[in-house]
Length: 493
Image (cartoon, rainbow, N blue to C red):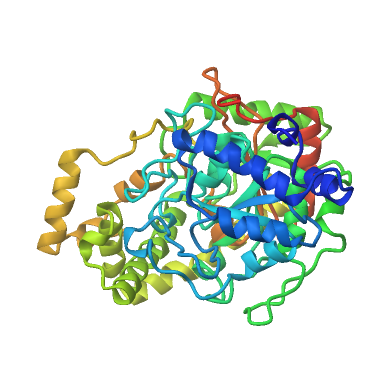
């Protein structure tokens, strides 16, 4: 098989070719590796090749519903036994992990051939992928721009045609943001569906979950079936199972849906005209498909939600830095300055304030549930701005110097605290203020690539469903995909 044939098929299609004996897993793997080697020097999507491991697996004849399909996993929370999980952090690059994470084990059981790990910002803490240890991942639609984050390496690899789908995860938008930047489909499953083990019961109080970015809706549906095939016996919940497999639900008619849409920023920041245009275009598209679509608001304090999200996020970074230092012996210089500043803010949080912030998640759950009593889905931009240029969001030199000085004087925690100023909220989430709601409330949400800017960059839109609405989202996405197909980035073909 040559690359022109390879790129025409999604993961399901490639698995069908293998099952019919038209191509072998080893042949497919070599096509994928050749494509990766051609584009990765420019895109920097893959940071840890695993070619020898993958060749041995392909030669052994993997079995499962996706047997022999090449696949990449994210270098964060997706552990492969015997291989380091670097998490975009210099201190972790040489420490192999002892066992597969649950999601990696399920991907392997499905027959996928994993041949590398993808670029991610340090500890997944940004909506861009520009870690110091590896350098920036780049967007195949325009390498001067970001592929988003934190699953930016995976999204860049899929959009460039290296693989039809790749591992991703989402604690605040990290599946949906890169999907929106790279013209891909990205579904964040609801809380508790995908196992987090064995190293954790759940990620970020259940706000974080694993999944994929993909070129086709049916790939995402099949891969969700793979990840949710059985409950995690060591997990904290027994998730409700859908009546139908997700792959079958994706093929069904979603019916006439009530969809409320908004383009306003939850944190009151500027929204780029192209982000507004993306949502109004999607609203017209959905109305044309027969759905009831109208402007609507959820009715909650978006700034408060983002502050409470950051309270958790800063504390999580503080713990991650502390654990990494304890396990590796790394000093402060083993971490990026941005990470150290945010971790200082996390250390400054009082336990009682953390608990109060977490308890307010219930308020956001109730507000979104009330919205879903009126509407089946919430439609928003995925991003408030088109994909940023590489380096555009770096701290200026004077701010870096000031931050380093604050750390030396022990003032960074108090000054950076998420409770200290709304400027912290705006600085962190002004470009991506829409995605955290679904994480905090545990609702499924997807980004669909319905729009491109006049400059040719993708700019997806987000749809948030109620509890257990993954099947509805997938069914709607299938109709959108049929009405307005999306394809690979033209760069590097």
